[in-house]
Length: 531
Image 1: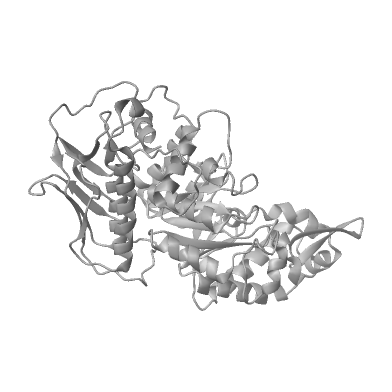
Image 2: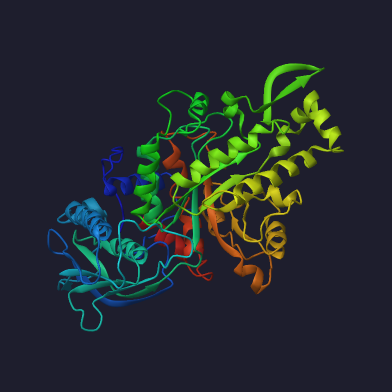
């Protein structure tokens, strides 16, 4: 289904309008293949298995009726209503539009005889669902979709064992609709069997460098669902600001940009619930000991010195301050209780930026001498080791994620820890090292969407293959997925969506579709329709 509308600047919560915004974004990022003809009713990401029939269904009614034939719950009924609105809006928008408005040239490809009519879309959920279910790592997102096959004349049937698979099937169904140059709306006929290649398909937003409104975060969640992403990595805080309201440490909000640039507990819960209803996990990140300059309302940062005198700046957390561990214990305990997902990202990257500050501080120098430390790497290793003990002792016992820097420093981590690979250009060697150590890994190195360049760049994200480092079958099994990242130095509410999409469509397909789905020309045609 092609998303277009003249009202592209309406940023309301209407899902259709959110998708229209994505359409506008892609219109500013030509696919790189001049005069590409879009496919007609082919989904993105590409399904694992699909067989198209020559027959078409014409959509000739105002509302396509959905019918839930299996198990149901309020979440599924809400999702069906949401997709009913999406599809109905599309039908209403294009029925009767003249060929001159759709395509200046081109005749209908279906001839004069109308094809079959689509009369019903059935949703068959095979297991019970409930409003207290949360998406999790390894959840079953598989589904099947048939349109006009066997005895299903006039019907489309979405079948899934779980509500997460039903969500993915509903999304694919919505993308099978398209308009013909005659002005009529059709849906493809055939069968699809689909499931993700990787269970972790993440998208990072950074709200520590520029505050993002809830509306924009939700728009991004809608677009993630549109592309079958299933993890929202929320980089909550960073050096510039601390917008997360901590109930236990309310003074942290003094590090926010302004008092109205804060995420209250209710707002955080709202984002988590919005994501849950789209089958998206929310993983929070509290990055330490670096990237913490906004934390100083509790006087826990290292003072930097020049020529023996404080220079008025601050570096990483102060390793000589033993109270930092009790503070971090309580803060992470609060975070893991407020975020239902088992995973928490504890950072650990780019601590080297603060090495000079540590070494300039007389108190840190004395502290290092007492331990016979001669390098700042040893200071970092002690902090990270203590941090991992804090995490291991939390009541919720979360599954922790760390940036690759922790492994690069030679610090011992739990075997089941997830290592987030992000550095370029030697990411293949890093993937080989991390998986050789037996750690599960998430790849982001080649999917930093904040790194923009002139011209076409979607294909470089599309070409990134997580298994290209030449590892063994056992190593490849430790790759649990990947994550597109939109860091916030140069984006805010005004441009983060346009900067992210449709470029994020490329890693979405790489993480969902089969490894062999790698043709530029074939992808370009589907991406042209997707926009």
